[in-house]
Amino acid sequence: MSSESANENCLGYAARDPSGVLSEYKFSRRALGIDDISIKITHCGVCYADVSWARNKHGDSKYPLVPGHEIAGIVKEVGSNVHSFKVGDHIGVGTYVNSCRDCEYCNEGFEVHCAKGSVYTFNGVDTDGTITKGGYSSHIVVHERYCFKIPDNYPLASAAPLLCAGITVYAPMKRHKMNQPGKSLGVIGLGGLGHMAVKFGKAFGLHVTVFSTSVSKKEEALSQLGADKFVVSSDQEQMTALVKSLDFLIDTASGDHPFDPYMALLKTGGTLVLVGFPSEVKFSPASLNLGMKTISGSLTGGTKDTQEMIDFCAAHEIHPMIEIIPIQYATEALERLVKKDVKYRFVIDIENSLKRKEDFPF
Image (cartoon, rainbow, N blue to C red; front, side, top):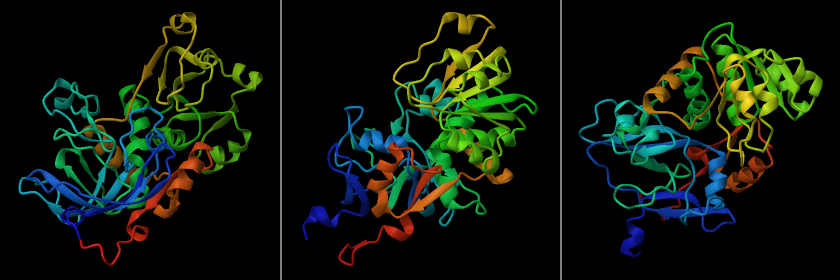
């Protein structure tokens, strides 16, 4: 065995080219630093970002590419300076694993908006120049600051999607005070993000209306997720009936869609938050100015909001709806995700499906 292969201490699944096909890949994680935590990954959620970078949709993919930024697992080793985690703790890692830790945003707990750029959990360039590799792997080494405590009574499989899908809607909901009981919330799109927005909205005591282009989602929106109302967004009569009726809208749809019809649904002073990524956003200035409405964007969330969200989910027994899969199914899962054929988040069972070969010495 070569010295290089002898140092390969991690087993994962990687894309080798823009086909996005994933296959077994051996690589090295960094040695444990004094502020680091080594995590045995048990579960990893499947996010559309995994598709985007596995298939080089942004033109900056660095192959071999190990996706995955919804990571849940168990602490297996801690550095000498780590005091908030111990071996055996349940732990999560989200969409970023480093930042400057010195700018105004990092100091306020908004590390995802680091002035010097946060380091993404996969396909990012870390401060030492190495390319980060994500959670489709057996373990990961992460600085303590970017790790989150998962309560022992909260399932690790359920925790994984919270680290991206969950926080992506929770953070702007808190920022825009969408936690006022009795207020009205519209959720545009019912996928991984949208279904979590519905769950949070109901937990906050909001009256929740789901907007979808697919009438087939009506029953699950109302019965399974507890939404109060379901609207087919292409039905002009249904849309007109709700003009000036909503305090808030969360737009999770990434497909191109008109914005003016939705802005018309907001009350005076209402807010639309965009968390999806359509190719363009177009609306009439009158849709914004008349009624002093607000449109805002959001990414995931900082460390403070993320830990708060995890604790909130545990306290209120909020669980994403998931489909657990083996890692060998990951390529097919990415294809199904593109086709929107999942309810509502794939979660890879890393612990039970990523098996180490007998000749793999670690």
